Image (cartoon, rainbow, N blue to C red; front, side):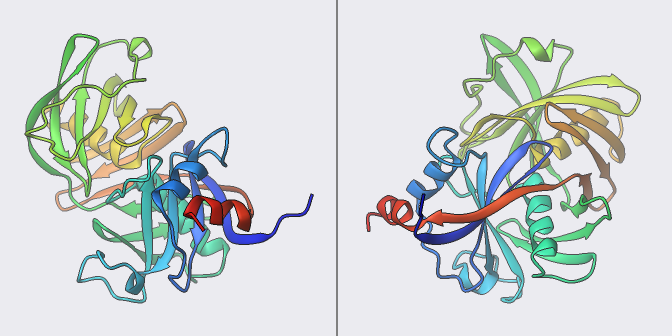
Amino acid sequence: MQFSEGPEFAKGHGTQNDFVVLPDPDGELKLTDAHVRALCDRRRGFGADGVLRVVPTAAIPDAPADLHPDVWFMDYRNADGSIAEMCGNGVRVFARYLVDSGLVTGTEFPVGTRAGLRQVRTHSDGGSTVDMGAANVFGESAATLAGRDFSGLAMDLGNPHLACVTDADLDALDLAESPAHDSEVFPNGVNVEFVRPTGPGRVRMRVHERGVGETRSCGTGTVAAAVAALRADGETTGSRTVDVPGGTVQVEVTGVTTLLTGPAVLVGGGRIDAGWWRQLAGG
């Protein structure tokens, strides 16, 4: 079968939080909500939790003003096409793509996001450690699921989170629908984490991500889970191993920032059919 050549793509995941990567070094790719929804669709597209466009910061009109225009920017879109400020697993996959494609050299480099600059240190196993910035804890709130209220810690990690430490059976939770939340506390929606301690320095987490649904992992969510678990133990700094359905990551919370360490895997790539791409764009 012959396909006309459209945009390049790669597919990757971080602890099974999966993404379509779209390299756009000249900042000329017209990426619509329809494109994103179709790419992420698990029946008519490649299937993913989101799309990562690889583009110079100079081509992003709403990029933070303090980012250097030449820094590679992670233009992240949720599966429903909405723009998200930050994605911890996405940054690791993005960094892996930059290294493997030769767009960066060395093991330490910055990545631009709508939540600001994120410093990345890559490892020989393909994973990386991302400086996620400080967690801005701004209060407490609650999520409601199947008629049960779960109290949690409200925080901002470049995107909003409600991390609920609980003794509930996580396997019994139905996260097909979004948990109800206080829209006054989270006017733009929220990622909700359900966190259960499982041993010294270790927790388990399930998450419902806004604009996506339940995912196998959420990088910023694992950081939120670690912060909430530490606070539940009367601590503000320390480390936690976080087990998610898609794997395991390590989170360190210091007095000034948070560090997320975990794997990143690229599984393949190629070119998108040009006719299909134009049809989605209305061209």
